[in-house]
Length: 140
Image 1 (cartoon, rainbow, N blue to C red):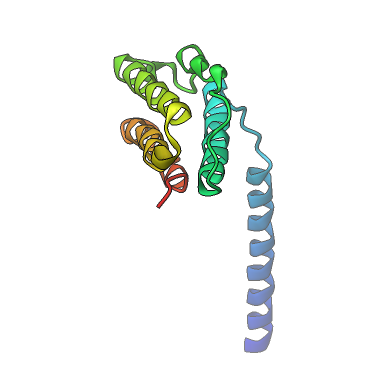
Image 2 (cartoon, rainbow, N blue to C red):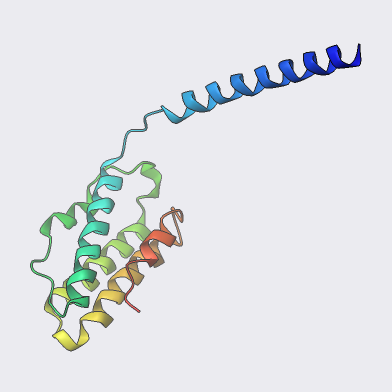
């Protein structure tokens, strides 16, 4: 009798696990639409990653990305995040990024890290999630 009960218990337990895995699959298929700001920041990340590669190869970044001025108008995921602080951080980021494109080769690393640190400073106040990824842009 114990063997029958034990087998029934194992069968019931294994059937529960299968149901749980179906729920996980449904959750993973959820599609989230990216905001304009998220797309712009991804472009900023990619540009800074390319700049890092060029600097490590001893080359200067090529051309300042004028599209980054969209930081002032791109729709945010949460529109209440656009405030005086956000605008000040945006000004500072664009200022530090422009310095990268005008820096002498022997100072590129410093100016690049300043621009990346300006991103980190802003993200420390709002939307802290990407900070570990942004830190990977720093040149050590």
